[in-house]
Length: 76
Image 1 (cartoon, rainbow, N blue to C red):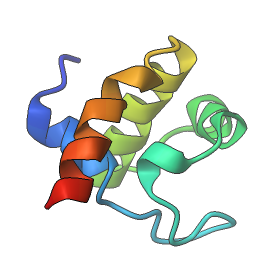
Image 2 (spheres, one colour; image 1 turned 180 degrees about the vertical axis):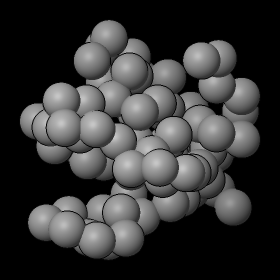
Image 3 (spheres, rainbow, N blue to C red; image 1 turned 30 degrees about the vertical axis):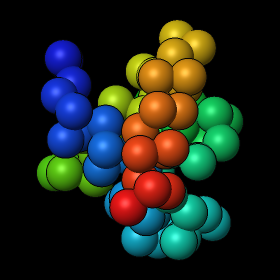
């Protein structure tokens, strides 16, 4: 999976729609929650793709990639 800029930006704008972390931005979900989804299975559709992408970013220590996007979103 090769994310495009739109997918990365959506991690910072889409909120978790249900569960313990309802309302939390996908990019701000804790690693253990993302790991749970990775073990149990990601939901189908767009939400599952975003959670899987965030899991890969978090698992590989690449969360810093989102910092410039966060700054850019704060300016708008």
